[in-house]
Amino acid sequence: MDEKEIIELIKSTKLNHIAIIMDGNRRWAKKSHLPSMLGHKKGVSALKTITRACNDLGIKYLTLYAFSTENWNRKKEEVDFLMDLFATTLKNELQELNENKVKLNYIGNLSQLNPNLQKILTDSKELTKNNKGVTLTVAVNYGAREEIINAVKNIVQDKVEINEKNFSNYLYTKNLPDPDLLIRTSGEKRISNFLLYQIAYSEVYITDTLWPDFNKEQLGLAIREFALRQRRWGK
Image 1 (cartoon, rainbow, N blue to C red):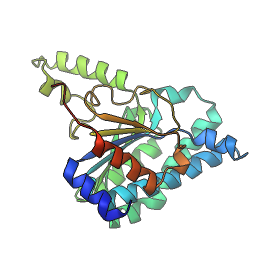
Image 2 (cartoon, rainbow, N blue to C red):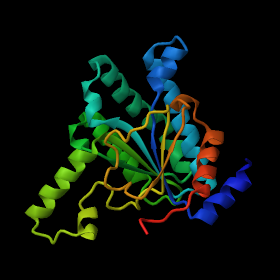
Image 3 (cartoon, rainbow, N blue to C red):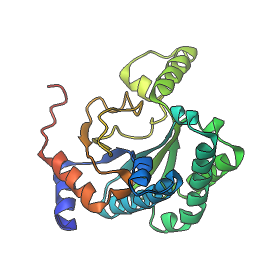
């Protein structure tokens, strides 16, 4: 598929928001007989490729599952490496992202991150807030169950009527449309506590491709599959 064909599919299907569960970094490393840390580094390359592709293709929103609330249970050296990699990648790529008009956004319990990383997130979001390219939302220290519980607590505290519109306004994603397409790499067939409320009517695409190998061509295949689906919205 060439880029022009993919763009036409995006326009004809009104594909607005793609969410991705980026899975398979460690398996890619194991398959390649490399340390798991190198798998995570290779995963960053894929992240850059897909962000650039979505921006070029005119996708308005891209949401990536980078670090879950459950990921803290991994070995400390791996968690520390991931946090350092996240901070370093943002600092190194921020100028290019800003030049390409990418708007950065973050969801999750950010207050539990280390102060240095919190500042990097805040500064990068502020710098890019007026950009008109793809809105890149990174879910870090994110768990959908925690998000929903917090929303319930806050809406009760504020004594607001509980309905779908009000409830959505108490979620981390209050300023984002629901995803049209959810992609999961590595072949695993589960949601892993990601956007449980928001993906009620999202189309789900699962590929056996490990995240570090997921590229623009693979993205095009997902978009083509999305275009073949008939979305009924429960009707």
